[in-house]
Every structure is written in structure tokens, then in C-alpha cells.
Image (cartoon, rainbow over all chains, first blue to last red; front, top):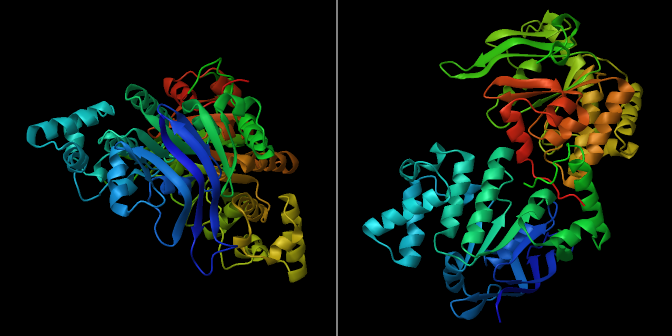
Length: 278
Length: 265
């Protein structure tokens, strides 16, 4: 069995007396990932895609309550992110599953120099110390194509640009050598030319490290450029899951047809690219 | 740049920036000698990324700040922020639409009152019945039901709120809409419908439109002419079809090639 991740009827409820309806936010999300897969999750605001990501990471806290199962192959065994104790998931995160979010400031500490933040996963998961640790940090910064890694390592995050911050966040997510990367709208806050560079970087890192990826976005052209399979979500439900090309050419569900048609209509406003891809 | 491609002569322009520069005290210039002009009924897109100076230029063109160099001209006369009567006339003619329909509408004000607000504040006195009729007409123009007037913004989706914001901008019968990223906060499926609404309004009412956006798609849909800003300068300007079809400045080409596209099929 090579399954890396098995998401089985994942649901998320909110336990609050004043929650709308019966408090169901995500319902019956089911998919599996084999090593090397690249799955996109697409949906509009409020579709439940980010809650799905947080549930897989075991990061939902009260009043949010997951149900179903999220089985992750980790350290020779299977961990269920829905039921695993916090400490168990702490070990899974970083070493097996890494994450990058829309707002790099959310995962970076404003009071700590970049190099210091980045040294933590190398020390904690890989046991590096002293010169070896320092070298690993600088290599990681160079690897995400930050020029002047020394300068970046000595900077606070308010001293670097948005694109540089997202590159640091990616270096941080990859530092402990996870097998699965969950990227939740990682380029949404970036300028289009900066986005192109970050997408290229993600693509290269995932390929070179033979990693598996879940890429979450509201933007169909971005998702289809970087994934092989796409899961469509709407109002907390899984609408369909299909190979990327099939989804674009023959969407099975009405909602997907609307989404593809709207994206095509917007795309058609720009001159044809002659087969050039993002 | 050939003559046919540059801005119309400043004398004919409805609104123009003439060699406009802007810098904060002791700061680097945010805008350097920018000239753009818009004729009545025309549509112009200003494109650029963060830090290009788009928002600063928009603030100058909206009369919210004065340039540190050059002039902003409205119907050929300099916009003078201290001239209260002149500014009132200017604000009736030049109305803004902002990016975020969640923060641009007062959540405690009924939609009908929000839409009528510019008429009152700009000194266009109407009695209750006339005002209600005008609000109903504006809601119809943006394809919202008449009973929307009695409800609060929270009852509406992002796309509907942007329609409300557009109705409010239309209330004083402006000659020019200045729109700042008006569809960027909206879901893909509603973007096109709001773009179509702008197109219809421009066509039916002859309103000029100045659109500020990082998104080449919407500029391509709405603007006959476009200018590309980089580092506070206009690096390329011309008919939108020419600029996007045959970009001459390397930055324009880079911007265009960075846009994620769908595979053909």
C-alpha cells in the first residue's frame, strides 16, 4: 500500500449554540493521495477548502470539530489526524506534512530573525547543531532562490518583501523534509510577476524532492497549471474530483461547468498565448 | 509611441494628470512626471503591481490629495482642493468605486440610504418621493430588486454589494467613474457579471471610466486604452488591443506572460 493520505468522509462542524443551520461546515470530503500526486482543491470563498486543509493538518480547535477519518502514513504507521492526540500530530506536522498559507506573516514570527526561525526545524527534526545547522539554514534559503541568504537570515520579516517572505515560509515548510506539502492559497496575496516565480519554485521543489502536494486556490488557471487532479468544493461539499484535463474539457457537474465557463470567459479576454503555459 | 497612441490633448480632456509627481516629505518620489488624460465617454486602464504608484495616482485624480509636482486638470482647469464649490462640482462629476464591497458600505445604513447619501452630501436636494424613485431607478440599473433598498448590506453577497456600491456612485449622475480593483475581491463566477454591468453602463450612459487594476483581464475587457505603471512612471501607453497584443516595453511583456492561463481546449 503506497497511499500517503486517505481522507474518508471528512466533516467539520462548529459547536456553537448560535451557529447557522446545524453547524455543518464541511461534509463527506473523500479522496486519497499516492506518493507523487498533485491534487488541487478549488472553491470560492466559504466553500470549506481551507477548513479541509486545517483538518488534514490536525489544526482544528474548539469550537470546530472534525469527523470521519484523515489517515496519514507517518513514521511506518498510520496516524488519524481526526482522533490523534495533539502531541502525536505535532510530530506528524513538519516531518510528514508541511504547510504554506496565503499570508506568510501567519507562519512567521515578527520578533525573530529569519535565520533563527528557520534553524528550529533543522535542530528539532534533524538534530543539527553549530556550523552544520548554520549551513543548513543558508542552504535552505539559497534553495528557495533567495539571493543573499546571509542578509535574509539576519533580517526580520518586516525588512523583506512579500515574495521573499513567502519563499522563507516555503523554506520553513520544507525544512523537516515532509513528504506532503499543503499549500493553501500560497500566491493569492502576491503580485502576478512574483506569483509566477513562487509557482515555479513550488513546482521545482516538489519535483526534485519527489513530494506530494495539495494546492488550494480559488483561481482555476493557477490550480490547473500546477496539479494533475482537481477536487471541486462548494458550500462545504465535494462537488467532484477529476483529472485536471478532464475537468477542464468535460466537467461532470453543473457547478464545475459554470466555474470552468467563467474562467474561460475571463481567460478569453486576453490575447491567446500560443501554447505558452504559466 | 506614435502620436495616435498617446493621450488626447489636455484641453479636450475631461480629467487629466499633467506631468504629475508625488513624494512624501523626505521620501523618494512615488510618482514621476506622469501624464494621462481621459476624454468624455472614454475608458482608460492604469495597470501596475504593488508599489507602482497606482493608488497614489488614483488619490490625486480623485482630488483626495494634491500632487507635489504638475497639475490635475478637470475640464481643462486645475483641481483646487481648497475651492469648496469647485470641489463639490468635481465630486458630482467624478465618482469612485472601491475594491472591497464589504468595507465600502456602512453596515448600519439601509442600502437605499447608502445609495441616496451622495445626492444629499453633494447638495442635490430631492424630496422623499423623488429620492425613493431615484434609488429604485438606480437599483434597476445595476440589476438588483427594488426591495433591496430596505435591507442592510449584510443581506447581500460580495457581487451584490459591489452592484450597490456602483448604484451609489451613479447617484449624482457622474461623467466619470474611477474604479479601484472593482472585481478583485469577487469570486470568479461573479467577476464576469460585474464586468458586463460596467460595460453596459458605459455604453448606455456614456460614462467615462478610469480603471486602476493589477488585473490585465478586466482592463482588457473594459478599457479602450491603457497605461502601464512601473516604479512611479508610465512605461507604456496605447490602445489596449495593441499593448496586450504587441507589448513594446519589457515590463509589459513580463506582466502579460506572468498571468496564469488555462490550457487551450
